[in-house]
Length: 96
Image (cartoon, rainbow, N blue to C red; front, side, top):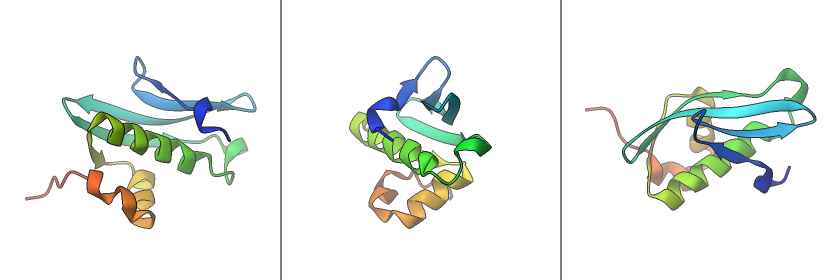
């Protein structure tokens, strides 16, 4: 999947991509310089194709470019960052 097919739909607060007529998206809330990822949705017809990973990689790259800190309330985003620690520096420590 081409990463340029993924877009930030700021009006809907989600990164999204249309693949084979199905919409996959990573929802977020943006407040100041903090982006909180809440859900990642990939339709069953698209599962197993790496689409969620591509969405999150693109979203994290956009967050880094914009100087945003990340809160990973979405379990997929959290797991993705654990598997790809090069993104861990974006995480905002909300504990304490």
